[in-house]
Length: 303
Image 1 (cartoon, rainbow, N blue to C red):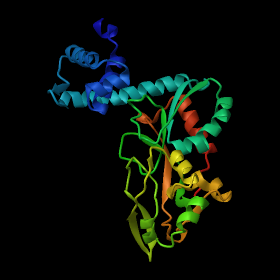
Image 2: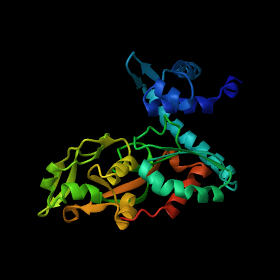
Image 3: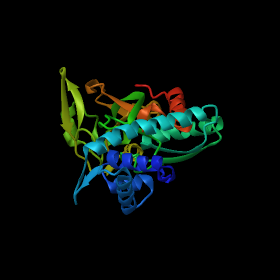
């Protein structure tokens, strides 16, 4: 009877979160519990099973052989449970709160303009959107889908490619009139090159010179935490910036910004992905509907 009274699926889910997130505190944040509550839950689970699953110390913990076996089987069980629930509700309408995180340029140029059409198609979904160019932990933030630009770090997340875009250096006509159009990458040393105050890959701008790839360090008197702010500073004539082509396409067509050093452009493509937790390959209907909608509607292009 005790086995029937225990919330075994709930215990199992918390235990799996502890292992996947690397500790009680992270699992507590993801599950909406306190670290002490998570620790006590794992202790009760061990007492019920009659075996130690985790060896604890003040700084770290390590799975026992029994804990490894329980974790591996538990992951499969939770995936089967998700599939059972998905099959039971397969013919229902996507509904519920959908938490989406996106980088700011993608959010302004694609995500926000498309959301009225998405909500018209799926009126039972409630959107919770956060725009930031910082890379968040989607498990800790309880986010369903995050849209990320640039190289992806190795993780347990599933990624769905939405497209890719060229990068282009641009400057406002007013800035170039005051400071001149640089003819070679070396002349950037005399220009105000604006940048981002987060580091993801390299600290300079890449170029292609005589069939050789080089990276030129840049310096400037302003950095920003998001791509749209960087675009606005460039439009204001503060300096040069390297931005995604989709972000400045209309500005270039209207003459508000001018391409710079295009003959040295290495042609590198910044890929854009939607990332999400896809354990076992099973997704809530609202998440699957959103991913399919993005794939259908988003046309980033590479020009």
